[in-house]
Length: 94
Image (cartoon, rainbow, N blue to C red; front, side, top):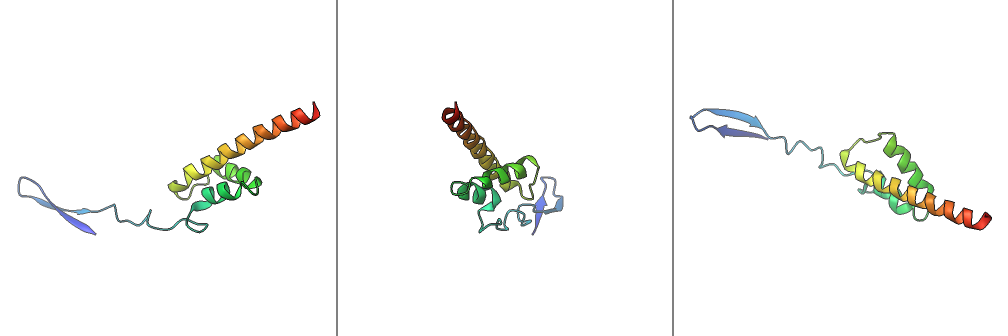
């Protein structure tokens, strides 16, 4: 889409509209919620998915900037589950 912009001095110029370039109009992978939220939600049933998303987060696997917070949430969940696991194992064996 192209817009016509008119200055106060009577000059006009064609300006390309960047808001409709379609970058964020594509649905995300994994049923539209993105790989980060998909692994975050399924991580409650299968926690290694949180570690998979952590590797993707720190490995800079970002095809779409909308995926970054999702992968960060999975990395935080992996950190919390690791700390809980260490405390449980320490209380069991010590």
